[in-house]
Length: 304
Image: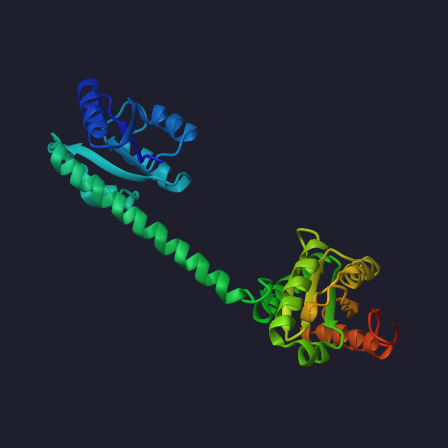
């Protein structure tokens, strides 16, 4: 897709000359005779760089620049005559990427435009890299679920919201049954495939507002905001049934079955995060003791 440049100037001869030059330089271009027209163009299509005169009818070029930087993803080059009182510092403070004097030498403008576009590209690559690094820091590399560190960050936030607004909050802790035996029998590569598949099954059974995490090893957690304990039990049964119905081709065996044990609990207002997680763990342990492939709930300290 070609880079698009918007030229804003109320002088028809300057506007048309710049339009022709920008087109000849290999870019797509649009024109506007006022800030208001420029904002209409920006609302209609993506524009990488706006080249605007400061002196415009109605809203001036600095006010336009300020609005663009606050509401749009476009860079701005500001033009002004030598005799005006506007300064480079004023333009930059409004968010302009560069500042040129009239009468504009087109060769100089092209060099400045290329520099702004190059800096724009580098900044976008940097932001993309930062986004990827952030994603890596909170994601389990194998299952692509969130990792345990992010689990505690998110759970803390959900607990704060629950305490502040009185929203219900439930937690699931899942463990793959006899997973060590599976690894010992079929190898860790096959075990990793099981972890990936179960991670996908968990995600497929959740709402958009729910989040799933690889807690560690063969354990997973699910945070269920706005969810009562009994509703969480239903979610847990859905997860347990979905995994039990799946076939895992370990060692070439197409009909191999794997099950999970799940603990369910509901948050109690003002309790410590460690108590909340520990109760889910205790509920999951009850499922193990009851024969595995089960869902156990602990909504009160002494009740299942």
